Image (tube, rainbow, N blue to C red; front, top):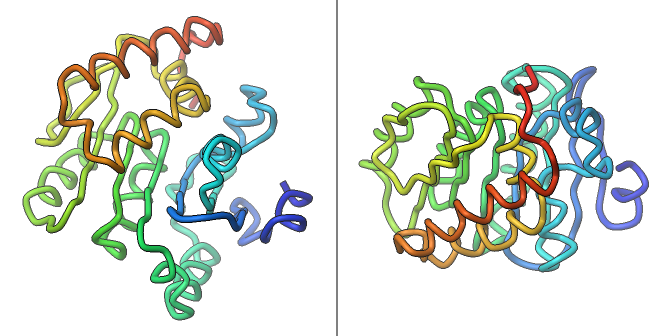
Length: 222
């Protein structure tokens, strides 16, 4: 990742357990929160969540990664994001898509969404508390915001477009990270077509197929 950052943008250690990779390409900006240790454990080519969108669509990527379940509550992370906001980094992108996998990453994404009210948001497996925040946020949202909660194990309290994928939690996160699934899902979120029942059904079927092909339907990573 350090080599990718040096060649195409930047790579920075934010703290002992957090890092950031930026790849400069075209609009939109994809802002991701994910667990670096999960990426390494699953062997997903050692690349962070969202990198498939750089390869397939030449979208810009800012990937924030944690080692362990930190919730991204870290002074180094906060200072980094505050610096980007002061420099109007986020304002330079007409469209932003926030992606997060797992409950702790979802919390960070919701906090970031409050700073970027027009950003689109995709979460996998948000906690019950996060789901309640999503529901309230959706009621207060304005102008083209779409929140998609993907949850394989329980009913979400979020009153937003939801894909319920009948696979294990670990398989769900891995399937969403795969470019074959992430590219059409992200495009559907950005163009608003996820409100179409047929589109949702097709994406659910695709997620199951991707998980089966990867052989990742196993107990969740913690």
